[in-house]
Length: 139
Image (cartoon, rainbow, N blue to C red; front, side, top):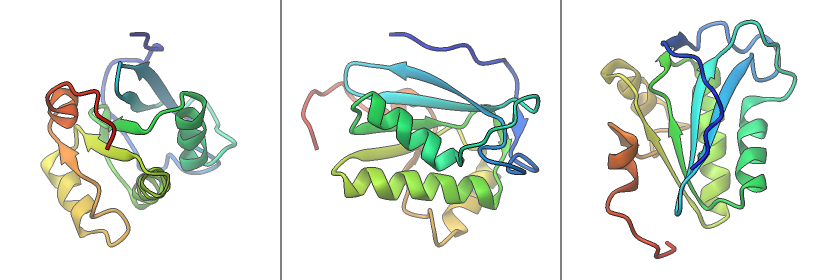
């Protein structure tokens, strides 16, 4: 598996959406059955493309139908990030795929669940819990 570099440490989603994707770094790792996208914020980068569009582009390029969005490096989520997660989840499901989220704190998980836009996104504590037992069956 190949992963692009992501800086260690937690980040906050507050004020990350000033323009475009708000400077999100996304580490892409391809497994045998899943695509893993780990979000981290780089305040030095000014993104021009909306985060949801950027993530969907990565999913398309990798021909992925099963995606895990890893948020363990996000200190707190905001409405903009929730909207992006909802858009990605909806689009991937519409295309017959699966999206799972992992790594949210208890407070952020409550916030996600209280959102009418993204409350149906399945959340797991870790990447391994999100993918479950290894299976090559397509949903």
